[in-house]
Length: 90
Image (cartoon, rainbow, N blue to C red; front, side, top):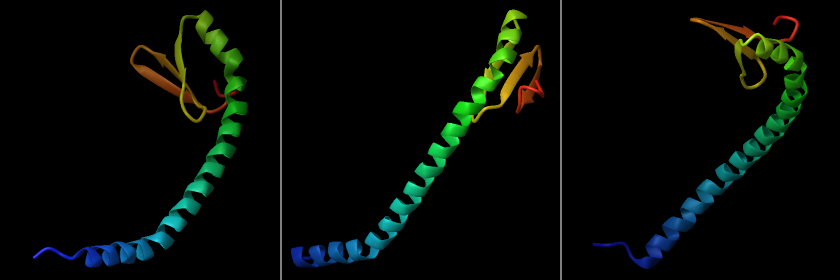
């Protein structure tokens, strides 16, 4: 026997009542994460250009490199890799 339309509607309303506070909490968490990510993005935007001189030097010497999120520099040579968090380390 299939449930009646009224029973289905009541089940959906119960589900909505149960899930709505949880959804609100998730939305708050998402908002906080978005704010943290925006702060981190600004920090990364400021840090990445600090490696520009090091990257130019590596490029001039034909040494492979890449920037890794959030901002470390990875330098590769043959079978080795080095990671640098600041231009001074590099």
